[in-house]
Image (cartoon, rainbow, N blue to C red; front, top):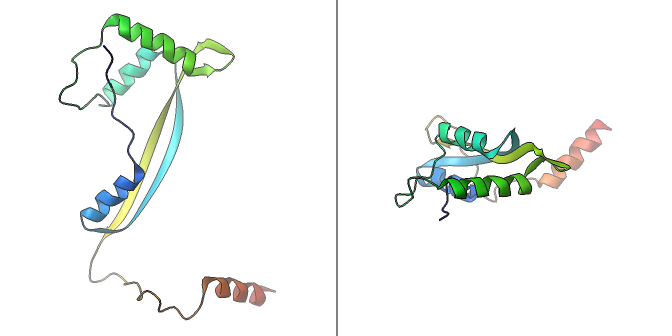
Length: 134
């Protein structure tokens, strides 16, 4: 049978919620989507395994049968070829690199003003700067 073999993609809103829920403030999240070329699915799976990207589910199967693996490799080569004109040139895998940063509150940090306490609108500031520059 077939089951998931790598971890699922993470919903980015959950990353910010995790940071906020542990007491961090002003979380900022960024993502890079990258494409990585591999000669075949066997090399891709070996790299995923060495990165520790195995399935962490407690009820997962120990191994995938050879027939299932070869069938998946053929499908992957057809669906994600490195060169769309020639499926024998290798495959492409997608990966997301998630960057997250947040701050822990400290008494020495600057505090934001109360909501609604601004004396100018953002639009007014940009108009003023344009007039002064001209």
